[in-house]
Length: 310
Image (cartoon, rainbow, N blue to C red; front, side):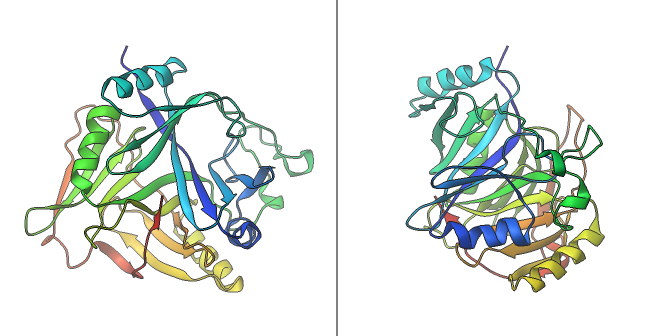
């Protein structure tokens, strides 16, 4: 049986000031602290059972360490390791609990320098008893959490100097499915929107418009229940003096959004109300042309801003 990815699992970010970044991710955004080591804090959203979906590690400068993907079966980690090694990819094994809460994993670079991690096992720790929801299918009680806290990780947007090649590599070698794509008038590809699980997007692979810039992550998206929550999130960001980088609705994916940014690092969180699911095994990717719409956003817009490099 061929190995498969199951879903986007987590992202590992780096910051020069852990305390300042926690004021954004924990105090303003509402991520829950699960565990802390000497230099790393592990966080999850309020409806997530897995140990973490985001980690913050103190380093000399802001950066992205890796993006983690959970496999469908335990043995698929080793199968992917064998496949990638046979292709000449440098694969590093990550021992159990080297990343807190996680079993054995592999890390490697995909074109053109994005670092991915594949794992299967991840602990599912209970929150403190006083924070636990009485609903067994919910993690934290909403009465004890930040009222704008997002529900779960949704997708990442990565910028690449040759995004089309990168997206095609992910499809060919890691079995991602393409759900949408966006072509420019000159025939080049601006963005390819991929998924491992059937959600509308889990990896948006975007052409870095500055040309020779290194690979980077523009944002990590987390879901909220609905569009009204975006206004609550915007209000909370203003109260915490956090910059808002955009508000509206995407044309691609149809998701409504609000972007906010950690001023210490430039790391962005997108609050997103979700979108459609794709269960059709014979799905025809939706193809956008630059001339289809006046803007890549259906409503609202984004503030231009840099992505954070690996």
